[in-house]
Image (cartoon, rainbow, N blue to C red; front, side, top):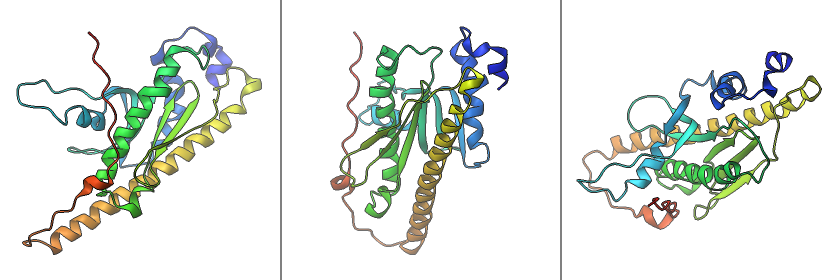
Amino acid sequence: VREIESGKLCGNNLESWYNIHIWNFVFDQAFGNVKTISVVRGESSGIASSLRKNRNRKTGTRRRMGRRGDWILRSNGKGDNDEFGVGEAGHSWKDKYGTKFLKESGTKLPKGLKDMIMKLMEKVKWNAAKYDKIETVGIVHAGLIMVIDSPKGYICRIRRSELMEVPDTPEKFPSILIMLASILNLKSRVLETLKVVINSKENQNRRTFIDAGLKKRKYDYEQHRLTICTTTPEKK
């Protein structure tokens, strides 16, 4: 409301200004009461994306960084952190056919979200009763929300919302309610996914204790795996 009244929303602001003055309140604060997940900002590199890019890495080659996002939903703690979502921001909006919007909504975010969901599915050992409940979420801060899941385990499904708008005049203010409701919807999806992953870890730890000292029969998880994302060709 303060930014609308001051008229600064209509100014020529930088991307960081929108992250601080708008998206911090619209998105970050929604996850402020979730102790196990943080909204990591500052062009953070994706862990799941990095794992995919380095799966065939050998000694003597440089480790490749994961895809960067303006924010990443990541579990707290040290070690192998889980990721549940990623977002991209921009300082201006042209239309839905703009190059930046097409690249982020058509390639960058979907690939990042698939990397994340693949890593989460590996955490639950490709359990069919669990992986259909796992979802990763993304936002292009031009007003587009997307959710990716894999109901049957062999293909990913992307669902996109209608374009939404942050109001810049008092007359348009009711439109922010739709956006806030959408953010809370995403939050509930993330919390459900988190619950599935945490329960899976607890069950695996319990199973490991029971089977301690016993020789395990190998199980081929590969037969249930999705195909990984294609690596983006390097620029020459």
